[in-house]
Length: 490
Image (cartoon, rainbow, N blue to C red; front, side, top):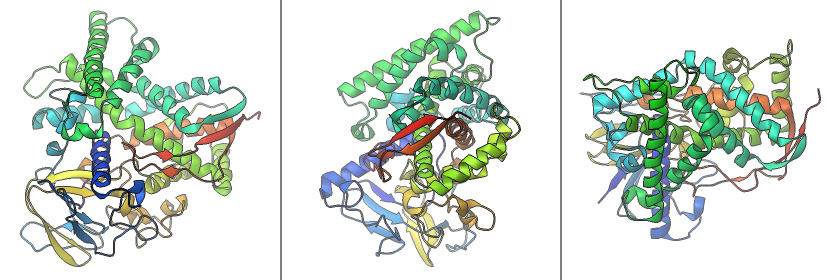
């Protein structure tokens, strides 16, 4: 019997997709057992999703309805007790339990057929640390400065296909643009310009091969799994040829050397062994899975929330005009994106607060964990699954004023509601495993939207915002995401 407790934990970059798959499976499990009884995604959960999201049953509660026992925490101050002391919590929070207490590996074994053997959660602890470090090296500030120009280039090329006016599904368009920009930064010029079609088609088959069944039976003999396995094999073959060509022809101009593929090719583990071509491919797949859906969903929600509020749209236009006042044709650079667009930045944060792509972050308790929440002490038993829901936690009224309203100014000077407690804001997880790709995500989304809003005047076709699709693997918009656009002439 699989038991689950919900408390505090964070999420690394490759957790994004893994969490989403398990979330999707759990929600379908609730549907199968409980039937269609209302609530989000027609699932009767003991949490209200409007107003105060916490249940009347208490801050931490157990749901014994299923073979999966779920003990859930809805407190922003739920903290682990310090070793050797009684469980304690303060408004300033406490330390997040380390990986030896709340572990990722036991949760995500079902991702091995997608990423491949020896990658991330299937790797030894020492090798996993090296893999994560190589990812972090590819996402550090010096690299982001180069990625900004690449993202702008891809965005402008893509927007040329729109013409001067028209109507389109913004979610679909930003999904296409996100994978284009990600490929340029992850894979390099040679792959993006010569092999993008093949890579995107194989990625699609890998993506479709992650289903609710996969979580419980990752090697079940289904058509989706067979296509997934074939796609991963072809992806390894494709990138092995790219890697061989680069190594055989070191003087040729393959790329500018800043893309993450170049970093992965040079990885050596602590025992001196080099990374294999299959492992390089697996790491690239992991990063693409981590960022593709989350970034396109976040850019879509951010755009729609801005377009839905004329006063915010006006201020965004003014902010962009101010940034480019001295030279309207200036290229977007990292400093501009990072320092000179606070309203666009806070709008993205607010969209993530209201509509996080992952509604559950998950770990397994390897030891008994004592926590305190709302003045009461609790014990999470060893072996329980430990979950936290950003969707619930980031709409708690004591933390966020008028929590259902889109209000990017709540993060600005004098308010800073996200800093009221250490884990009040969970848009990118929290603690030692918070998403290492969050800075790249901000650069990617803000660069795309800066160019988009300066190139086009837009309005939503629908008079209302789309619903949140709680049945999706990664939770995005459900409904009409169409916009009308007209190219600016000034």
